[in-house]
Length: 223
Image 1 (cartoon, helix red, strand yellow):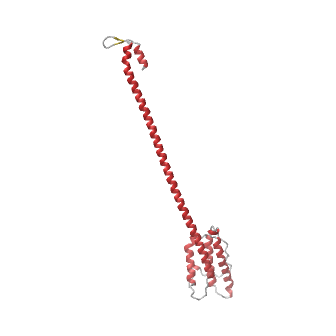
Image 2 (image 1 turned 45 degrees about the vertical axis):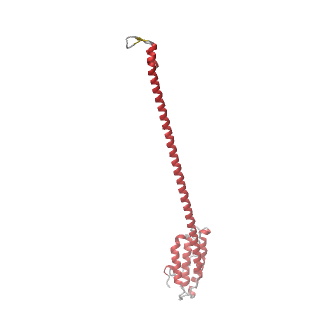
Image 3 (image 1 turned 45 degrees about the horizontal axis):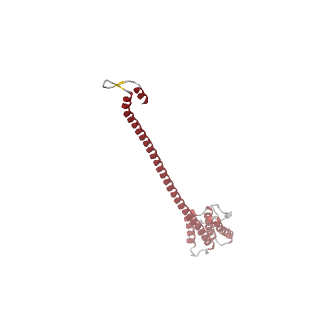
């Protein structure tokens, strides 16, 4: 604008009425136009600045909302994880208590097997007793460690051997060995109990001696 304005001021311009305009008249004629242009430019600049400011503020507000939403989601996820951990911990404690209780029941039942008085040929409930022991083992094996389950099964089997091989001298040795294995089953149950650090390993149980007559399985005990 300055270059245009300067060139105009330095040149004689003929007025519409036929006269010549002086520099002062040209200056006076151009001043309103220049002022208007400057005003327009100022308004445009102000508008652009406000627009940029508004966009920046809107972006900041959006980032703040996004951050707040993410923080809320993280807090909720953390709370859900804590609740899940607490529930799993409660369940683990309950499961452990159940497992310990089942091993205690197995030990108590082993004592019943050890001290049960049976007389061959007598209606003393021996068959029902043995079958009930076998049913209990089948229903609770999943709660027992491998070693404890094996020891209790050995106790049942050897109790059957003791009560079915007869009292004659030819089988006295087998009865004696079966009783020893029955006795050993109790400590094996305890050794494999979680209460005593058992983690499923098999505690030593006396092996069946060679030549042992085959006893009827506890699964099919008959009165």
